[in-house]
Amino acid sequence: MRPVAIPSFILQHYQPTEVLEKKIHEINSGFKKMAGVHPEISIVIPAYNEERTILQTLSSLAANTTNRSVEIIVVNNNSKDRTEELAVAAGAHCITETIQGITAARNAGLAVAKGKYILDADADTIYPPDWIEEMTKPLAAQNKVAMTYGRFAFIPIGKTTRRTYFFYEYFAEFTRWINKTFRHEAVNVYGFNSGFKREESLQVNGFSHPPGTNEDGWLAMKLQEHGFGKLFCVTNPKALVWTTDRRIQIDGGLWKASYKRMKRMLS
Image (cartoon, rainbow, N blue to C red; front, side):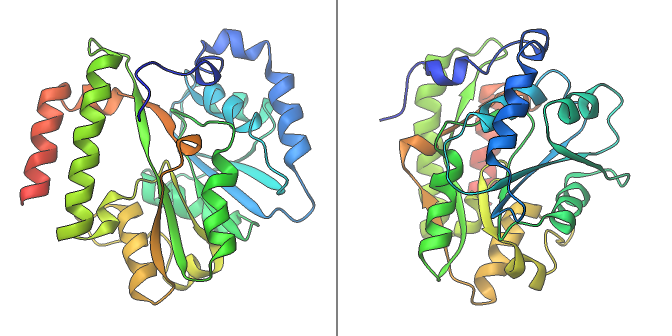
């Protein structure tokens, strides 16, 4: 059952930057507790002008519960605002990638990551307390899992209500079932909620992909085709992440976005 309302443990991080700045020492402290000399997990977050949301993401990750050592890498992709300043103050390792674009940013983060496992996150997404552990467990427990990917729910920033998204998300789940059954499961992989083994990704040239394809799904397909294992959808509600609907708004709203989804599915 999907949640109709946004849970309180998500709302505590979904706050304005000026509010979270007052708690930035708590975020920093949370990352210090997770850190180790040799991190087991690297969380890579590309960021371009994310001053309004980056602390929401970092706050939620710092509140995660895990016994694994974790490093946080924010890839500043030519931001013109305070994205890097806030990320550094929060305790993240911030690097700069001057080649504009998500593929270059993700590859830059992958290149400096030290963890055995890579978790991909986005700077406008809020992560539940068990996300790190739930996304990593299948990779660590099973040799034949090439990549984990998870589910997500929308935080409305436009006119569409959360109740409307509740039903839309079930429709989206149906289209993902169609993708997995009749197309290729890699289509269901999103870069803001996925994980894989670093060494295996380097063997397939990371996120590099042909024109007209997506970097996250293409990596999933490469890992599968090179025999590293299956794709594993993490369905535990504890791993459900929350992202704003700004991409849907950019696409022209919910109905236009739904039409585009159906068109892609049928093409």
